[in-house]
Length: 106
Image (cartoon, rainbow, N blue to C red):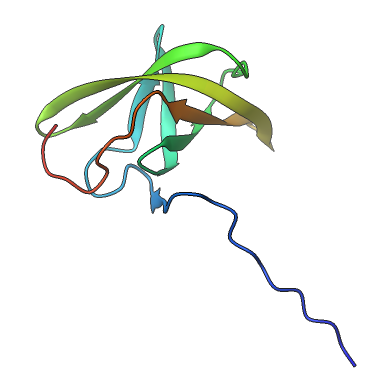
């Protein structure tokens, strides 16, 4: 009899691709590192950068939409190499407070 692997969803919060319906996919990690939003939830975001991200670092994630900019205080939780050519890193940015990822303007 064959064994079937079942994927278990471990994420605590639902995610939306990119910046969801509210934010653009381009964002900035303070002090000025451009990043791309891979996915976002109300409590965290997966970002991609050409610069190494330091887990444990306190930062601020700046998000944009047609209504303006929102800055979220956050902590970099983990980082890994996502591509070797070009060299790209992905990291999880955990927000200090929850945000509305499905609303309209900031």
